[in-house]
Image 1 (tube, rainbow, N blue to C red):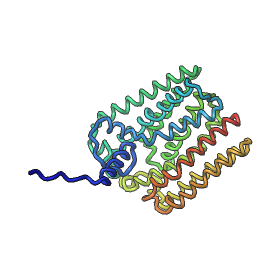
Image 2 (image 1 turned 120 degrees about the vertical axis):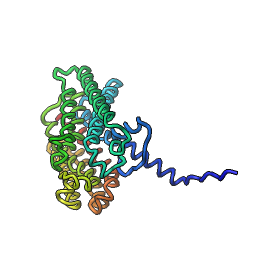
Image 3 (image 1 turned 90 degrees about the vertical axis):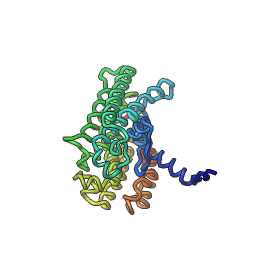
Image 4 (image 1 turned 120 degrees about the horizontal axis):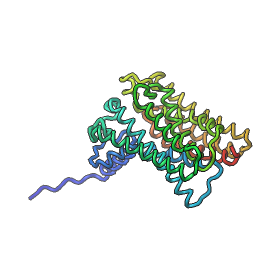
Length: 331
């Protein structure tokens, strides 16, 4: 008579499914071995990182002042989001994992490359496929928009180059906490914003300057991601802000930059006559400050993910508010 098979506790199954979901999205702390090569490839692309780029396209379309809700415009905007998120952000994240495999072997050994779940050559192939597909979509968007100068293609090439020098030696911008985090912040705020604006309007220097200013808040957000890698960064001599200034001071720098530069955008909106939307943007900063005090500043190593989940929705809504205000003001 065979022994009864042990029952799996519902809590265990639920935890396993949660860990797999976190791992598929590219979130930290999900030590689950995956066997499907397609799931492993998706994990390398870190889908959780696509969201701000997709949102940036929405903000740029809003700031153009020309977006209308037609089926054609929705399809074109979706193609721009595909370029910015799954393709070029996926390229960036896969390449970053390739060049960070030694750091990940310390901080996140379960990642696909250090764990051996995917061979290096297959990771390299994925990098090239995603890059070329992203550039092809950018060129198609230029054709649709009838640009005299292929600005979408230029933005895609420029952003891809920044991604390369961020991750790859000899420059490897991420070795410097200030340069690397600003490059990351600009890539997640300014670049997709420019793409959405240029697709439906005419990109101008005022929009470029404002979004680069906004990207200084993005620098603060990028610092939040450094806390999960302090041990590996310190071991390999990378000068992230938590390594240079210590965990508590780096957390304070991060929170200050996130708040101050959003407030700066709100002040600018007041001066261009968008007082109502400027006030709304300021109101959206308040819960961010609250969650900084509740979670992030008290224990950034433990609460970084909880803080991001709580506070960042208010930040991204504020970005859209700023975009709508810019479009309404005709900036």
